[in-house]
Image 1 (spheres, rainbow, N blue to C red):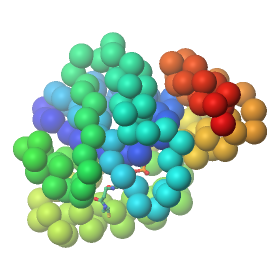
Image 2 (image 1 turned 120 degrees about the vertical axis):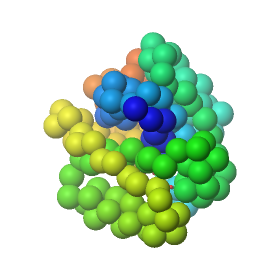
Image 3 (image 1 turned 90 degrees about the horizontal axis):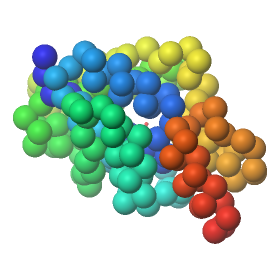
Image 4 (image 1 turned 90 degrees about the vertical axis):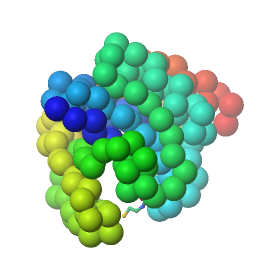
Length: 161
Ligand code: PNS
């Protein structure tokens, strides 16, 4: 049993993320969900503070899960937490290519940080935060993709845009 870091942008957290967090919480002593910046994603929909609130609410029934943020390199954060395990989900082959590269680079640079992959539940393999953001902007219902608390925040956000 160990503390593991489940990093991501979570803009916003989806049911796919939540499924992974729940499954990881049964495998590991503690799951630290960390919201980090993905430099490839330039225009976030939700601020970091909004994402923290949504994530904390979504995991409130999982006692061994915490939510934090970090502005920097993932491997620095993992070390700061005295952990050496990153958990990431894999939905499809395109994820695999990106994730493999990230895992290998993080291992190479850190020396000891391993990335463990959990296969996404097939019912969430097409769910991503970017799909949610795009559909929500065009008024397509996304209730199947996100937890209820996120759906409420998405509706509020859309009326403000
Ligand atoms: O949910 P995402 O956008 O797929 O998460 C990607 C994330 C945030 C985990 C990744 O971009 C990341 O680790 N960012 C922190 C900066 C960092 O360590 N970059 C080097 C990764 S090779």
